[in-house]
Amino acid sequence: MRLLEKWAKYMKNTDSISQEIKPSGTQQASVNLSSRNLENNVRTQEEIEPQPQSPPETSAPAPETLPPRGVFLIPYCIMMLFTGLPLFLMELSLGQYGGAGPIHVWKCCPLLKGIGIGMLVVASLVSLYYNVIIAWTFFYLGNSFQNPLPWSCEAPANFHLCQNLTANQTHQSASEVFWNERTLGLSRSTGLHDPGPVRWELAICLLAAWVIIFFCCLKGIRSSGKVVYITATFPYLVLIVLIIRGATLKGSLQGVEFYLSTNWKRLGSAQVWNDAASQIFYSLGIGFGGLLSMASYNKFDNNVVRDTLIIVTGNCITSFFAGFAIFSILGHMAWKKGVAVEDVADSGPGLAFVAYPEALALLPGSFFWSILFFLMLFTLGIDTLFGNMEGITTAFLDEFPVLRNGKWKVMFLAALCFSFYLLGLLLITEGGIYWFTLIDSYSTSFGLIIITLFMCLGIAFFYGVNQFCNDIIDMICLCPPWCSKLLLYFKACWALFTPLLLLFILMYVFIEMYNTPLHYGPYEFPVWGKALGVCLGVLCCIQIPFWAVVAVLKESGTWRDRFRKAIRPLNSWKVTGGDRTFTHQTVDVPFSVTLTEHDMNEMQA
Image (cartoon, rainbow, N blue to C red):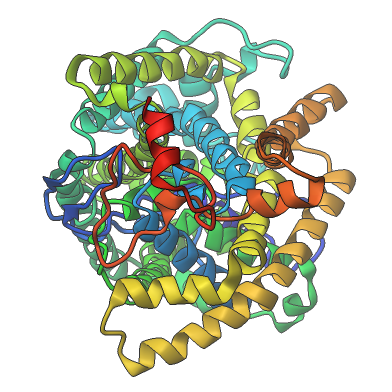
């Protein structure tokens, strides 16, 4: 849901190039790919429920921020072509060819095992705070079954807040008071150092959210097909309904005009290009390990290139399509208040839980539209977090196959979800929004970009970009001519364009992180808080050099020989045709090493 966050900066400050931004980051989208599970050495073959393509997070009309508009579509499309498409295909191909999760898949290059562990750290940090958004959604959904809505001016408790509101521009609206006081309890906390007590209503909502995630994950990928039938289609139905309703409102054309307006000067701002790349990462879920895990359940001969083109194109179209649902209703809100559209286009959680609920409260039958909107947010949140958790559980089950057994898997999932719940309680205290903002800002910042950069460089230059393209052709079998020609484009991106763009983004993130203080509203985060956030980012990317050193030390010979062995694929990686099982006699060593029958007998003895 939070992936739309980067877009809101352009809506609210569309005529200003210099503005404060938080560190770049990404949030994972759940993408479920195919119908049958063809396992590797630690998986058994079993039937999997056929799954529709899960919509990227941009499917929501306005979960937390706003879709692309105007001239911003130019850098968005460029970044999609040269970073989104290549990295998305790389992750899907790795997972499908290796038939393993984000850690085990690096049998293709043991030196880079830290990339998979870094993905696991990022996914864990995101899961920690992402379910808090679902808890907020639960809270608002429960309060939506009231007429009038408790954050509307029609509620008796809000009469004094709505008097002379247009004359007093510093006065908080009813929806802002409901968000800050009723939901967060923010006025009783002075900052990051003063979290205060846990808010029991949110604690119950958070517990309910984790219980739902637990049951969704309990049967693993077999249950996701049934779950995604609902979570993938319901947001589209709500989008269509909201667009039709928004088109009938006065002032909607004003919102659409704002949505389609352009400011060509913004193309010269590095911030625009950085945020375009960030949005691509958010919407496609690149670098979290979920794509690798989901793709590992594909049939070996699945056309991964076709899937990539369909999903990425659908993601972009959905983002653009969702903008009309958002801005038509925000335009009506601006018309009714007599202000400009940019004055009501909020960013961050303020869009999903302040601006848009306030706009819905102005509609006839507002409680119905509010229920529909927050049900959509809930389905999107469950869909996204389910994919994220699937990546985490797949990584653990690959490393510890004993956890696949019935009761052990139940105990493991219960312990994992309960641990996330306990850690998440910090984020639903009276000052929890400050901790939420801190983790949100840094957990998917420079660390995630470094992870994807090393993934791209490692596959292109250690594993070999030509070998990787041959693996894709091997999977597709009867590769059509257009597919072979398209791989030339991807090869150029993996070896040159994508790494250069990622380096540009990384440099810009470091510059902005150094020059720009982190804020939530008027509160500026202290130096120690910002340092703690940087440590979270470092925790993600430090896994790469650490596990690279471990891989080199495990080999024998000179340092040069050790390095060469550490970048060679293991025997279990060299699978062909679709036979993805291997027996207990197979030894995971660099595949170029040949063992004699005598050696095998000695090892078995």
